[in-house]
Image 1: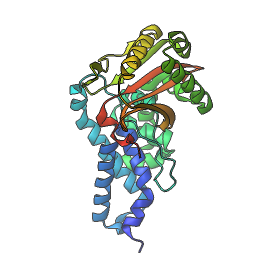
Image 2: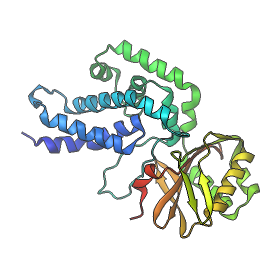
Image 3: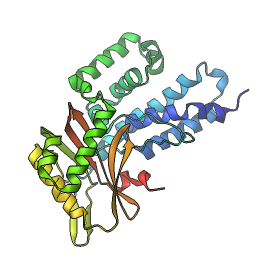
Image 4: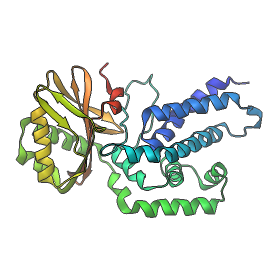
Length: 295
């Protein structure tokens, strides 16, 4: 009989992908995968017909329960809450995980935990309705109805996330150049007129060299307001010793990360509409950037 640990490791990356895209939290997703492993090791496999479906069902149900319990924590969170970003690894020895973009993860916050689970498993992980019916102990029609509600709740917004990576990286470089040169005119050209900036600082105030920085507690609307905020923040960041900026891939998209003394300080990711930036997501909560340390 095949070793149970080896069997689990075959599906570990899939299980983490499901948990992460459900929760938007790296550590919590890892914990749920570990809980799933422990339950699997206690399971009498003679009663398990389809190992993959069994493990996916466990981690999905654990993710749904986690989201129900996390609701109050989200309400008590200081400032805007953004999902924790996930670094894409290029090293083939590191497990490859499928992470949706930050913008898409935020969009999924509109759904109930069960709607989110069925939407992800159907649309992202390509499960059929008969598989979902068995997993959630519902009829196929019930699963179709839940899927329809999820799509209705998301509306037409899902079409925003069809990405051309070459265009995305080109605009990212233009954006970074405008930021680095402090050019308001060039920066404005990269932004849509109705752009929105979302920033997550975890309610913390950052102070260095007499410069104080904090994430705005509410979204910033309009390209002039967003441009002024970005250029003002960059002028303050320039006072930080040893500040470095790099383009990396996070959540499947090129993003800009800033390091101070080798420690991650901020991560900027965005979504496009045409050849302009529609939304910007700025993560400066150090707890959510700890996985981005320089190697």
